Amino acid sequence: MDWFAWDFDHPAYFDIYADKAADAGREGPALAALLDLPAGSRVLDLPCGWGRLHPHLAARGLAVAGGDLSPLNLRRHALEHPAPLARLDLRALPFRTGSADGVFCAFTSWGYFATAAENLAQLREFARVLRPGGVLLLDLVGRSSLERATARLRSRWRDYPDRGYRERVRWSPDRRRIWTERQCQGAAFRHDIWIPTDAEVRACLAEAGFRPPAASGGLDGQPWSEDSERWIYRAVTR
Image (cartoon, rainbow, N blue to C red; front, side, top):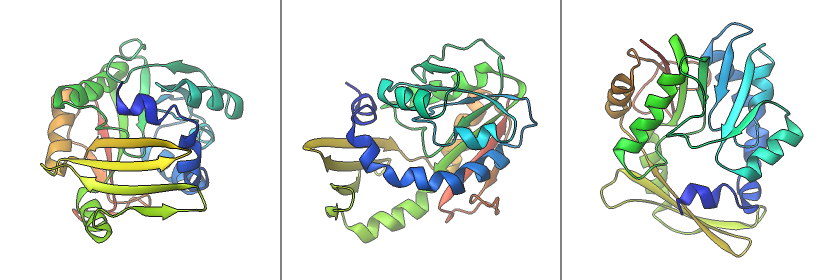
């Protein structure tokens, strides 16, 4: 089983990521503004999780549909933020070609797959479902910032008693992927995410069918830099 099929569909997920609900009030409006599409635009939130950012997209008058692999997350989304929803694999989206004006991919939700071909397939699917001139907003962690943060952690276990879990963050031996191990509710989890360089992001976007993207270095739209904590790309289909 792929790690994300297990990790994101376990009830402990909501405890581990409890802080993201509070973060949504800050991140949602900022990311929706960076997507920068007019009211009435058709937007796909992929993956949508439990829909924490959905209200902020909808508040801009966007027609939002969500998609995710996790039935657990989709059930919560349907209860808390009713919307058109689909269970899906990001490598093979169940949407018509050219059917969307925008794709919204937040919180480092690209790089989950084990191979470069699979990660590229996700971007190619985003490009396929977008109309010509459609917009992808790709929100990633900044690689250099993450390298500094993990160096301070020194691969040690850290306890989060308020949320009932412990965590260890390490790089893979080739320094291309970040491994985040967690123990919560008697279960073990391990995220395994590719963390690309800026050059790799841009090369993959180009190969998938996007024009050279505009890049921001934070939620406030500040200029991109290698040291930015967030690398946020706004890419338009050719």
